[in-house]
Image 1 (tube, one colour):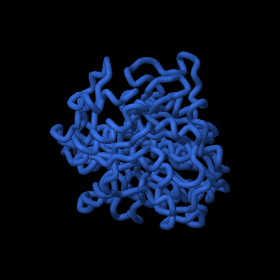
Image 2 (tube, helix red, strand yellow):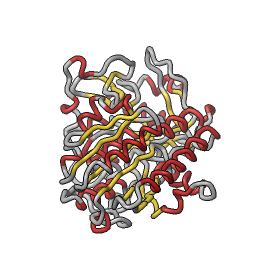
Image 3 (cartoon, helix red, strand yellow):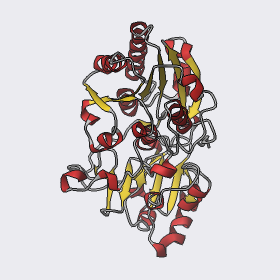
Image 4 (cartoon, helix red, strand yellow):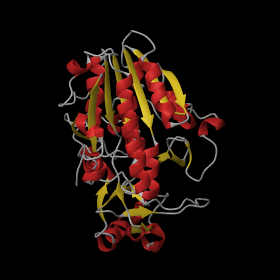
Length: 385
């Protein structure tokens, strides 16, 4: 079981190094392998997040990828190593212990519904909650990272998410630049860097490698082909930016594993377990938060220990807070409500799935959010131009 290293080896520590380089601060110590002093030397700092680009995957591409030439080392993600938790860390500068975004499916106690949290909409589908007048600030109460630092800031995202409730909330004190394609992505990065001579911080997020990894697996030829296209375009970007006094920090929110369909634990096949639950499963397929009826806790524990012990670890949710899975320091009061009564952490390459009405999505091949090395470790790539 690989867990985050919040004492100087995690993406949250990377954000602390960046924050201090721009005159800001977070409660976490700096990243051991990249100090604020080193970052401070540059006029432009661009954090480029390639969703799903795990450290282990990148190392496997050593004979094909030029990015390996700039690899400083590895970092852990946060818990869970998944987009909802890790991207929120990039955009707040703090760990899930503080921002309390705990997975793709998350109970919003404030309105009594299980959500898809980044689209800020119901799990079963439909319009964002903001269309009914519910403000995401009531859920995401942490300050945007852009407001922690003293610089000219840019937030670069695909047009499908650039103006979503989540992205707008996390882009406060920055200029939003939206793109439509991979060429557009790199064009916006160049535009931001060349926009003036003052100190600038640029956050740029690319989602497609993760999407392909979900659909086909990270090592499928389509995913590999796309990664190598990204690699080539970064090489071209570096050539175009020579002499701009820029530090490109390239990393990811998580890695991924490939899960055969035969490794899916279907909740419908375990009715005695299902009857213990008061809500649908939350979190992710690799780590599930279970809300259990108070009078069925023994039945739940006994069933999981007897029937699912081969597939998952069982924890009481509070234990994971106490053991600092989610981060250090005081926890957000909202955190406890977001992680259920029990947590299932899936072993090996297993996932657990439930069904709710109207969900028609086919199961993914690629997954993340678990505690394997492939999911937890991400690269730190530094390119100085």
